[in-house]
Image (tube, rainbow, N blue to C red):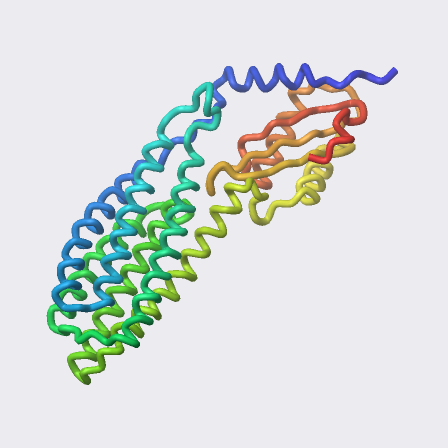
Length: 316
């Protein structure tokens, strides 16, 4: 006589797992948060210097870099807030806590990169039709100072977690600032040596193109996570094959869903069908062990079945 589905047993298992301390809270990397805070202070502080220098010298390259640094300062502030919010524990209304705020911050940062780059290109094109004489000496001095500041900020951030998408977007912002400082230095040098004032808008456009490329990468990846796309290098067929090979009593694996809460936290839900009665706890432990070892996913919700899946008509 066929045995009924053991959904109720599965729910009991999940409840006991939560009782022993399993939850959705993941410790925030406090080193990342501290690094972002110092980078934010330095970036916003020197941004004021570049604005003054750009207005005095008439340099678009300096003003463009100042605008980029202002955007970066706000982006770093948003990143810092993302780490701060992620420290908040899960509650009744947000069962996963605030970790997804990191991805929202990365998405906004990426969009701001694209907008800043577009503004730089528009202003540079205007300079071709209405050239402005640039004071090269103050431009060169401030650009060199900016390069030093940006190198310090880059050093601070690069010592953090390179795989964190929020941290990665902040580093890309700073790389854009570094390129902006180098472009301003080169433009000032060309103006001083050859009086070639078009070097200012030309190099500004070059930096903008590089910023667009980096910004698009962050927007694309964060959008994929926000849309709950499947993480790279994971697919349903692979999961099914690994589980059925590792656990002979499993006859089918279906309704597999894998997505990311953040770039670091992956979540999976799935149904498994077994061919005999056995201790559900043992089956679940084996399944969770395989998923953790093979796919590095620690948070899973698993439904064990003995009969055909009652949700077979559902395609979601």
